[in-house]
Image (cartoon, rainbow, N blue to C red; front, side, top):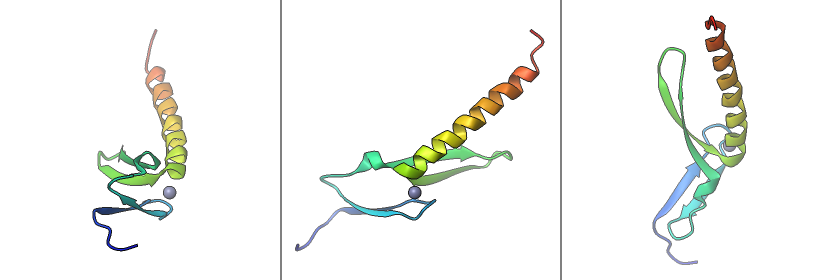
Length: 77
Ligand SMILES: [Zn+2]
């Protein structure tokens, strides 16, 4: 296989799946950088694989709906 340069190793922060990407053919659509702000205002960044990202999107979609419901509780209209 010889010498390969410019490799990037990706590792999912949730399930620890790993993949080595070459610069010429990056599988970037499989990997997702996400940011989440906790209730005390701390924002963390995580790298997720596509499988974990799908679960994450479901989680935050539920949280979005809860937040919208929470905001509407305060409405007098
Ligand atoms: Zn994962």
